[in-house]
Length: 301
Length: 264
Image 1 (tube, each protein chain N blue to C red):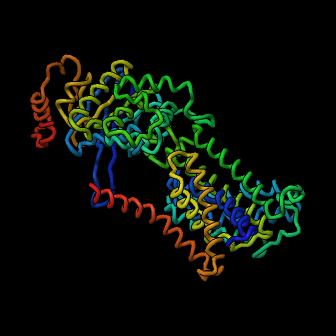
Image 2 (image 1 turned 120 degrees about the vertical axis):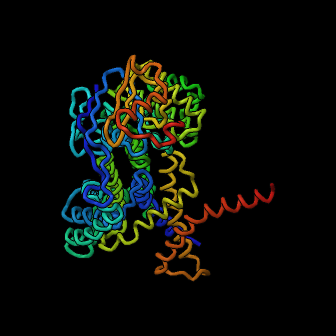
Image 3 (image 1 turned 90 degrees about the vertical axis):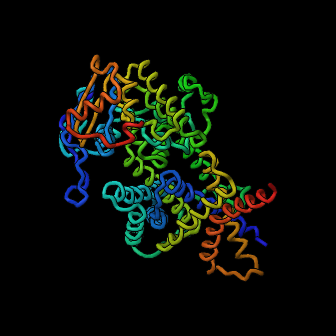
């Protein structure tokens, strides 16, 4: 079974990937823009935050800069698509590849340790009634809830509604006077800003930023999004956003269980394989379920 | 007032599929006129509407809407002046958004959008009132997703959305063509009612000569990217489909062979 530490660890990373899932919800679902930039903007956020923290910045300010860096990366992808007419998927791959070099430049080397630095978590360790391994869960839960509420408010605003219309029916959006190109740039930037935030928090809780930490973030984020949607039908914006967080936590718990169950014989290096299998199941299973119910109800009739 | 002068547009220039869609089209629509536009397939009806709304850019010519030259402006910058209902009932609304959200998008057509709540309480009474004029019971379903509505209902709502805020011209692109006859009649009746009540300036493309003569104040026929005739007032009164055909043949020396124009 799962130890308490492993359980809290799963919650902690789950909450961080919940932020990634928000970003992916924005790009994939709201804007219908398959964006792989996140594999680069996640370590970008980590790199920016780490470098600034080491050079003595306030950790929250450093995290804020990580968000801006993520937004800039997202804007580059969207501009490649909107202004230069490069296919959205390819544009995001180009930015992702470029970011690998950018991240190495920012850090000056492949990884930076943050263990001895003051991070956003440091002051929280002094709170008496919180145990060491609970601190990051509580803090990240607060960050996730605040992000969720802000995003929800935004999606319900005039600009947010215009963004949703842009992704759902661009022709209609233009006819209503919405600058769809600008909306895509803003939306993809916002999406990657959230991913940059996740990267910055991840580096601070793990005690290091690493240039390879972004590999597969897109798949994990998608797994969280699709898994969450399978559990909570995203019939409203609020439900869709809650599904992102719940999906990410369920995903991390499932991974933790799979790795901890000795009978399965799985080891840490099987993580990516398990992820791929889980995503496949999350996509296929809802279809199988309706298929089965259809078959049974037909027999009844 | 809206005026198009000598519009020229060729699709696929320099390719074997080169297709001149507009060949010097000129048309001026005065304030309060309701113009019906007819023409066979490929006459340039839809291209003309797309050029007016900004979905396609003309190669040459000039488009002026209420004294503003919009020739080079993209669609979203013209939207405040040009309202539009598409042929496809699914194209004019967002099925993933609720009815009130679709209306909230339309009430801000061509205006700045901020960060305040999109569906404001003060709008709801107005939405309910306009929806109730449709007599479809939609005023009690504001929160329902647009996708739950039938094609005819969605087209009726599209029409409402286009007339929710003032515009210089309302473009209707065969907006009843994809509906069944009964629904089409309902949407057409609604169209004339809204245009009369709000004294809108409108341009309606239709595939049916009969419809073109029954509604509106002026009829224009397009052929090969140009206006071939333009009738209004006394000249138009009591005119029948066969008169239109004679007029067309006399002017062009061509026989109309498009069955759907005759039968529609």
